[in-house]
Image 1 (spheres, one colour):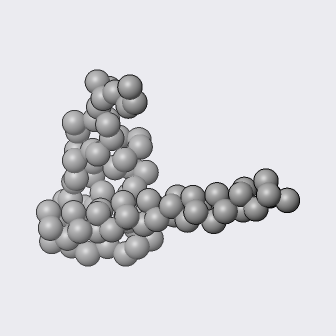
Image 2 (image 1 turned 90 degrees about the vertical axis):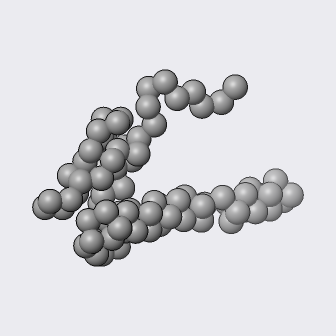
Image 3 (image 1 turned 180 degrees about the horizontal axis):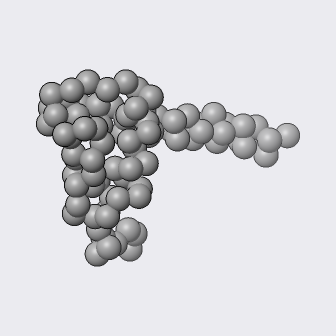
Length: 84
């Protein structure tokens, strides 16, 4: 019973952080598009751009997100070391 309670507690504490991470990146992209391109995008568009800007782009390149609007790739470079 104690094991189930601790698993439930871990579930409650850590699962919401996954969605908050995507929301945070979407908010960052919305502000970047607003600042650099003087355009506003919807939350849905921002979530679609998260994949392009953070995952599938080539590091140190620009990604075209809208007509006449490109943003720098935010994917970690190859030289980046995560962990010890």
